[in-house]
Image (cartoon, rainbow, N blue to C red):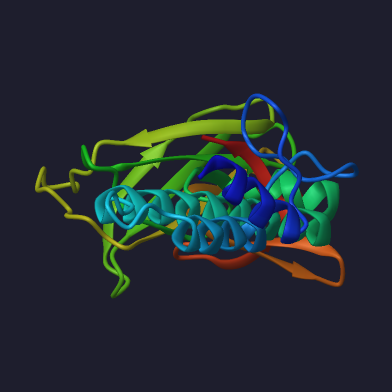
Length: 224
């Protein structure tokens, strides 16, 4: 029985070592899907009619091989995507599902309520104010950041309106104003928002951010 099986396997062009699993001839030490099907056919042709191959074992082997083939194909696909995106694009893929701090005016409440963000000041300011409004433009809360030396100033709103009522999940509109003794100081509101997808635009990765739309990776100040 064994000699008949070995002869069939050799006729199919698959080498059989004296010990260990069947391997392909010189040039490859792995079995592909075609080799598996050849071996399965040889096994069926050379089985003992009084002790046929167990159907359960055969189905399990085929299912296992299909699973391994699927994982291999998925790995090849992901590598192809990473190669197309390039170094910066591959790094940007790590942003998906995470939150980024970026310039914007739309924010959604955290699971615990309220929002966290920052104000980017163009210079020193004697006063800085963050205004949080509802989607219909109604002012919900005004946060005073007092005197600031400039740069990025963080703020945290607990989600309660001026009247002490829970403002809900949003979306909220965030704006910032700042001034010094000479007049207005440039102020940009920064909000945290989750990244949904990454795409390429002229060779550069672009993030699709909830509530803000498409932004370049260069616009990200922090990653949460």
